[in-house]
View 1 (cartoon, rainbow, N blue to C red):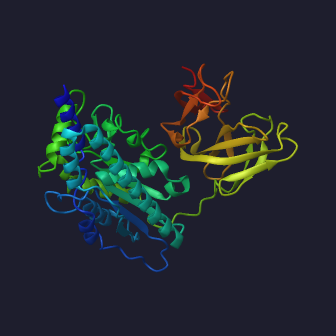
View 2 (cartoon, rainbow, N blue to C red):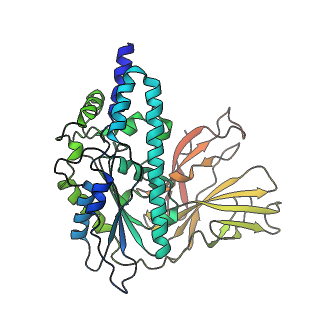
View 3 (cartoon, rainbow, N blue to C red):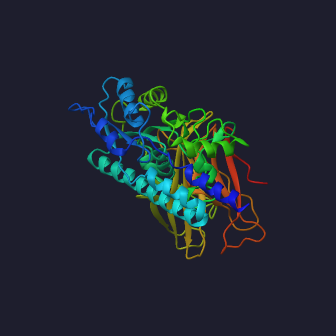
Length: 439
């Protein structure tokens, strides 16, 4: 029994030995060939690539990221002059995980702890590097657009970045191409190793699939790539772990074979969605706007609240007996709804003062002119108000959607709500209708 457990730990660690392709330096040398900006054309589209772990290169020796850039260049719209750059980050090394896999045979708990700490540190550093790179680029030209490409661990880093980046940054990302993503998941086809192993590592858990962003992400997983898991399901998980462990020394492993077919698909995807010229100024700056709010029905008639940089304070005599409301824009989601077209959903945090509680309010607007369409109904509950999970807000499949936590019989204001439900809203022509709020 003990021997079986130790072998399972070794498989867990070995599964990440090849979350990578060529080294970042090799990729950077290929990507030094950047498109030049034409004078007067405005900001170019910026291609940003994240390679995987530093280890053995792909079979043909050409970086997957660089090949995506080449195909993106060839497929781009006339008049677009993109630039490229590899975002370098302290990616894990194959040798580090080889050593950990050996350690897992003798000291499994310690090896697991080290694996989680090292991967989490590496991924967080990668997220920070992307954020810094995009921020610096936008300082030079606010209207610039981005396309991202990530392979293996680099794809995993982008996964996490997309879930934590601010809405105003996400609006500047036209498209994302991912290959061999350890966080890949398809209900009928399989799951990536990081997705599977998140049961052991809390910091590896990611909820949902790119909320409000799915149409701009293409994540490709080759058949029988044991890192992203296409073709492995059910009892195949043991085979997936075994194949992942041997893939590091197997040059024919599907994890290395994304060029040229998949990278052509990825490059074409990025080019088709990249803006060929600077975007027109947004008609509505959602974080600097005046809204009409009720603080989740604290009052019947909406109160005007001027929000600046995502925050605002309402004062006056019509605040339901309170001196002021402290308001914050918690999340913004864009999409399209039947009969309404392009819309924007804004989730507000509202804290009446003086008090020790806060409320949330979700309203939907026309993206074109910022006019309000309506708000989602206040939840009909007898106790404390449920809590929206801001990062989950999305507009997809013809609905506004969000994860919401409801208070159970044993929950209190101090402990917070514990019952998680996925709630959606549809437009019936006159108002939003709630679905899924009740068990």
